[in-house]
Image 1 (tube, rainbow, N blue to C red):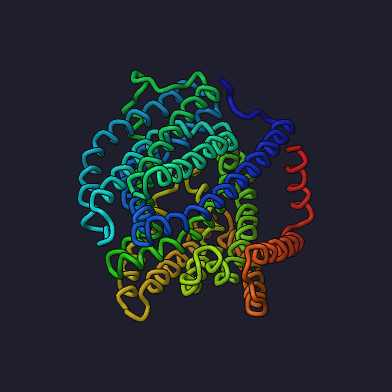
Image 2: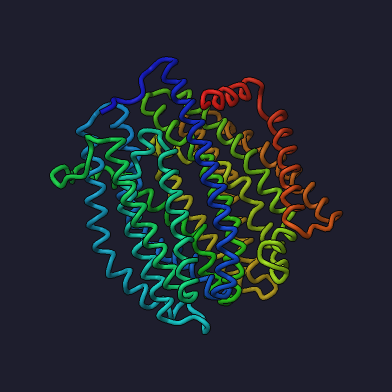
Amino acid sequence: MSSGVSSGSSSTDTSLKQVSKNLLSNVFMFIFGMGISFFMVPYYIKSLGVEAYGLIPLATSVVGYASILTIAISGGTARFFTLAYQQGDVAQAQRVINTAFWALAALGALLLPVLALLSWFAASWFAGETVSPWSARLLFFGASAVFLLSTLTSSFAVSYQATNRLDIRNNLHLVQLVLQPALVVLLFTLFEPRLEFVAASLLTGSAVWMVLNMVYWRRLIPDVWPAGRMFSRARLKEQMTMGGWLVVNHVGYILFLQIDLVVVNSLIGKVEAGEYASVLQWSTLIRSFAGVLAGVLGPVILIRYAQKKFSEVATLSALSVRLLGLGLAIPIGLACGFSEPLLLLWLGEEFTFLAPLLSLLLAPLVINLSVLPLFNINVCYNKVKVPGLITVGMGAFNLGLAILLGSIDSLGVYGVAIAGAVALSAKNALFTPIYAAHVQGLRWSRFLGSMLPGVLLFAAVAGSAFALQAALQISTWFQLLGLFAALGAGSGLVGLFLFVSGKERRQLLSMVRKQR
């Protein structure tokens, strides 16, 4: 087994080459996934109806609440395993992964009847009059099974982070991305559009994903494998000490990002929930894109921490925040500025009234997602208690504000979106960057300045796009994509030369060249 990354310039070159490979792989996966989502959302709405479609993301969100329990075990697994792997401690790596795997398997068995009951009652809670109760139940049953499989798969997925081989993970994920919608279209065509066919396709894709992860674990880390005799209660206690605070943080995450659909469905209406869910897909896409970019440097930062290269951790974190903000400013600005023609061409004229809601959901993400690299700092330094408490407190504030504003007839779904924007931005614009600097012993404002370039570029892109939308009659995908490409490329060059130093540009160019 490899003892980790060796020192010296050669290891740096290898790291840079792998970072560029991971980045290109992540970007390709995002673009492909975005294409799938572009096709499937209007396909679902046309085939099932907007009310039934709204249940699909809702089922995933509601069942995902069970992750509050599993995160206590799995939350710190990647950190502890990567540290042991990079330091060449095979026995410790064995204990970490075996403890996590068997504990998650036992917890999954306990959760099975709970999720079955949840699925049974879901029909009466969330399904509207146009949806068959059994279809709703089977959809939730399928989402529950997918969650349990994904929980077990998370144990094997740490191998990609420990070895910095995110490109392999992405290749396997592409198989899942293709398989799931292909099965949906096939079943809808051969039989009829039904929610249970959606559940069957999701379950099949997750099962294949799990098997592929097991196969590639054996290839990447062949001498570490789940075996019951390596389970350690002491190891579980240590992992859950960190995982317990990650649970608190995850509760806040749910209150921030997975509660809005429930509030809209329960408080405002089933149809409105379907409309909200369709527009929310853009937020999900942007969040996925941010994860693509931020995820590339996550393993690198953790490996540098394991090697005790703390100054590099700080430098990489600051650069990551600035580059991620700039990278997000362009797609978010384009989507906000061109929101009306985008919805017209994507879903149809009857959905263009949701253009302001789309902009409201997306604009705050420039700040809220640019700080994603800083979350790695809390995990690296095992400082997750305070962020967890702050996140759950602000998440509860978000829920209360969403119910309050959503109850105002003149606001409706906009009230729910406003609540999320206010609460999450208040947390991520101030607490997250200041606390990350505190953990590393840096000046409190170290990361605040890194966020500003993305905000400025977003304002310029969104303003330009909105002006073009008002001046031009955009009625075809060719026109819209052409404007996206031209304005996006121009904005990218402006951002690169205004907000990225010559040295940093040379480093980025070096990464790309090393990939060739």
